[in-house]
Image (cartoon, rainbow, N blue to C red; front, side, top):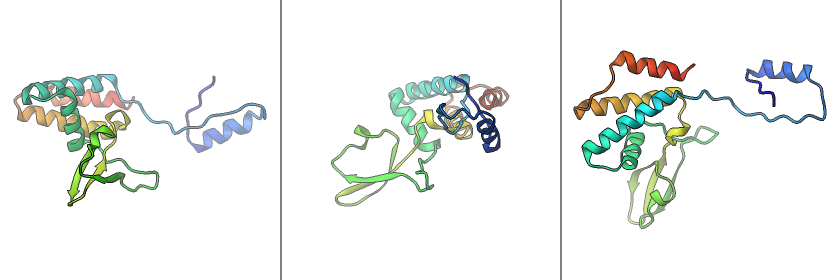
Amino acid sequence: MEKIIGNRGKLLEFLLINRDNDKKYELSEHKEKRSLNANAYFHVLCNELAKKLNKSNQEMKIELNLSYGTIARAEDGKKMGCMIPKYVNIRDFYEYAYCYKEDEQYSYYLFYKRTSELNSKEFADLLNGTVEECKQQGIETLEDKEINKLLEEMDK
């Protein structure tokens, strides 16, 4: 299967040149994949922090994402979230939810993107925040120059 990546003009040009009416095409937005090295480094730091703070790796990842991650937005740009009865555990439905308000009956949550859904810039914010948390806890991290190199790999 031929894969075309380009802007609107390139796609239109491709379709005008290839006029086979029997062919079907699938169109999706192209998103840059982040570096596996940066992703692996995030998880190493996350695990080190979890050990230091006596938390599970998953708890730590959720905490870091809620601190340095990106709020999920609908296609119209509005923030995503929900209101649920206080007796319901939001983590049974979605892990990356931040409770910003409670009343007598309900808890109100904002949703954050899963770490796998973050684009390169959003992931860089998460990684940089994680590095700062590690430094505050006395956990050794890569030099800024090396971290920047990992982040630059994400854009390649």
